Image (cartoon, rainbow, N blue to C red; front, side, top):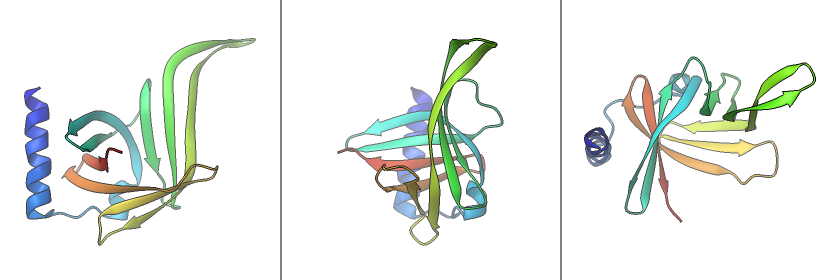
Amino acid sequence: MRKSIILLVLFFAQLCFRQEKEITKSFLIDRWKVDKTLKEGDTEITVYKRSRTLKIGNELRFFGTGEYRITYNSGRKIGRRYGNEIRSGGVNGYYRFNSQEQSVTLESYNTDPIVNWGLVWIDENSFGVKKNKR
């Protein structure tokens, strides 16, 4: 609980004083795992941390080609003829990074709507996605 309060204070301090360091497109190119979600009033901030492997959970991956992939991995095993596999699903598409607004626009290859995310820099290994609840 104490870590959540400290992170929340850091987020709002960064928002008030503008980010000293800006996120660049090259910063995003990597694998990111959902670390936690903070909720405050009408705002929800999802914190992503760099990840090398994904066993169970959600992963967001940005590629240098402008494509992204979100993977949902439940860890449940499904019986197959030649063994077991980990059950997973996901969304693929392309992204556009706006350096002035510090935001990312995600558009999937299937019929999902376009999603706009406001980004908040935490440190070199983590960032937050600020979303307003509807």
